[in-house]
Amino acid sequence: DARVTQTPRHKVTEMGQEVTMRCQPILGHNTVFWYRQTMMQGLELLAYFRNRAPLDDSGMPKDRFSAEMPDATLATLKIQPSEPRDSAVYFCASGRRDRDWGTDTQYFGPGTRLTVL
Amino acid sequence: AQSVAQPEDQVNVAEGNPLTVKCTYSVSGNPYLFWYVQYPNRGLQFLLKYITGDNLVKGSYGFEAEFNKSQTSFHLKKPSALVSDSALYFCAVRDRGNNDMRFGAGTRLTVKP
Image (cartoon, rainbow over all chains, first blue to last red):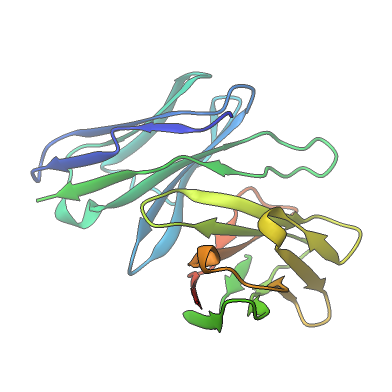
């Protein structure tokens, strides 16, 4: 049963510290998405990769957030420096682009719950 | 830009009764539409999607959704609700000409025994 995995599941850190979240997409999937979920804003798309190339990161605060895919089995989301307003659940999702219809059904990981004190 | 609205924050139904979770969307072109479910402390799970073809789409766990182009709606339905269906449900839309998907705010479904 293939799944998206995310580490860590929970992270508590202090303001100003660097936070790195990792995601392992489902083997064979070539698209990766990063989302942030909060009570106030709901689910927000932060960044989107296809074949390891960033296609859209317009939802991400550029000054402190960065997203990369060093290889096909690992995606990272980094916050430096972290702030209390970054506290949220961060989800990674992966998918495989449907050649006929040009869309991806996204499969979500369990999320990383980040608390910045 | 595409957007999706889930007009109800909360839906309560009795076990065994039919359930409907509403969703309306707005896109400039033809939509791809999705439903996801989220259980506590879990990620979103894919339920079903509409791409093209038959307006009635069947998905996981006995759920189905009906695409209605004239009303720009994609309501989620199930003929007989289970207590275990209690969760947060998200509708999502993607314009075929766009890369990103927009999620609704979510509807919390509570099924009471």
